[in-house]
Image 1 (cartoon, helix red, strand yellow):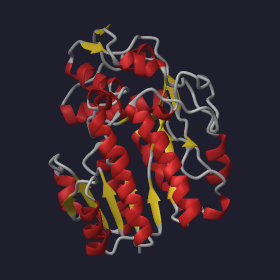
Image 2 (cartoon, helix red, strand yellow):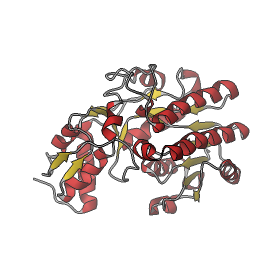
Image 3 (cartoon, one colour):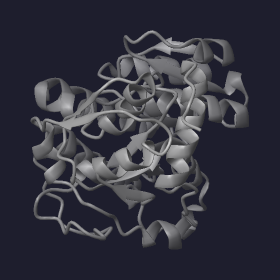
Image 4 (cartoon, helix red, strand yellow):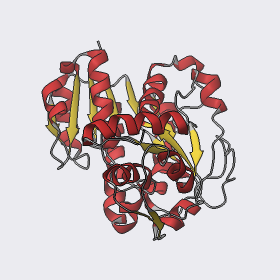
Length: 320
């Protein structure tokens, strides 16, 4: 039976991934870890929770020994927008924190470490459309730099020490259960809450800014599929593109308005420059060929599912 430690478990992806892994492996076998953010009731009720600062290697070691961990999902990170406001913190958490996790993995001979990367690893020189899996990586944000560093460190630890490090390059992640944590694609989550409350939403990106996006169920599917893929079939290791859908804010607004009327205005801020450096769509043929990746949700299916679930949660009646 797997013994899994999840860093960043109180974050947008971590909070939902933890629950799914506990359903599969048993609550007591999946240890959720967060830094300062108070965990929600579901995390506390379904299994162990520990506070952890990934910048402190001894704290990671202590938990690995305490729970006899064999697998780490390392999700603790400072995201793109916050990372530009606090680049020194982003360096410490994203790079030093990862280094500590990898060193613990090496020293304790862990079976597997999952470290998500991001489209932030790409930069202005990267081809924008159908971005290849193997292409130029010259990001201009501390978050992006940390993700390229993470991809290379993971590959290094695999080739030098045999530590099985794997990762997908996530696009923007959208969820109705958890709010985002300071990324450049946060608008695609926030906008649903404003729309269903009947409030005007001010989008911080231009209306025609196309970016790759993914619904949370597919995000969880992607990383767990890769974690379970036979090692001998993997040619890539830490840098798999995964594509689900690409759209601009105006496309999302049009789809949401099928269910609810609301007003939107566009006031691009510093995040627009970050978004402009990222791809519009990804070539994920490597993920398809090496471990059978295929998303379940497109834009229409995602919006329908979010509006249906979030309207119930908020007690909102939809248009007939």
